[in-house]
Image: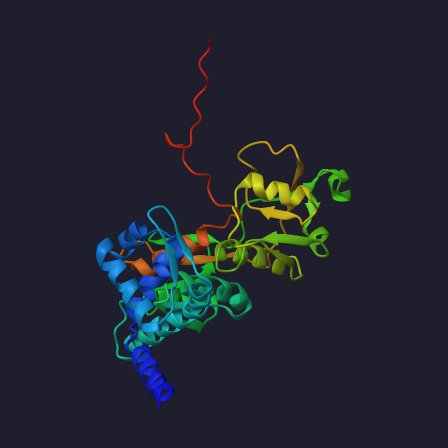
Length: 331
């Protein structure tokens, strides 16, 4: 009888857990900092601490080990974090779909694209849903002429089109203006004179951040390799590791894989060889994301920002007083 009562009590407690509490837990688990998590959630730190303590009480397990200086996930907390992230994303998508079905379009993007760009578009949309799961994307397969007409009359919010002549439309190309490869200094391709052909990369492992970390880069890479006639052999980087240019250069030098970027390195990287790659020709005008400059929603801008961020490395942090080393004083 006692065991049955414990089961009933545990079931009751689980039913009382709210999605809001789980979102609060994810914010703390991702930042490992109560103040920063509270700022992200726009609530007070005491209220956040109370909700986390209530969640732990309801589940009957400790999710976080914390003291005045550190916050760490317990094994139970790590399991909950891994399981609850996709569940929260699915619930947000369900709510977004319900709003769309009910005629509310304020959290939706109506997007058109040609069928041959579907794989690239899926990479971008997966990344958008990962970062902003409350956005619903209604996507349509339309040839470019029909998509341009629909964008002009307001039937859709954005479309993958050749560069439009209409100055009222903003446009970001899928194909970058240049392509650069990073190689180990002793790699056979480093001895090739002149620009390398993209086909040289077809049988080479290529380093790439995880899909949810840099979807704009993955989309650019997929499209360029599609134009080159092959699917890249991608080596996913550790999503928790630092993505500075120096760190990626060290991975290249160690033979983990080559790296394709859309621009030259900002600073010299002596441990690797950097060379040009000839971009493949496109059949007809190149595609890009087009949207109206005036009156576009924050959701469309979020998609555009995601696509514009097509570099594999994160920007270097701005120097601050805390991380700038002052020169030692002369005696």
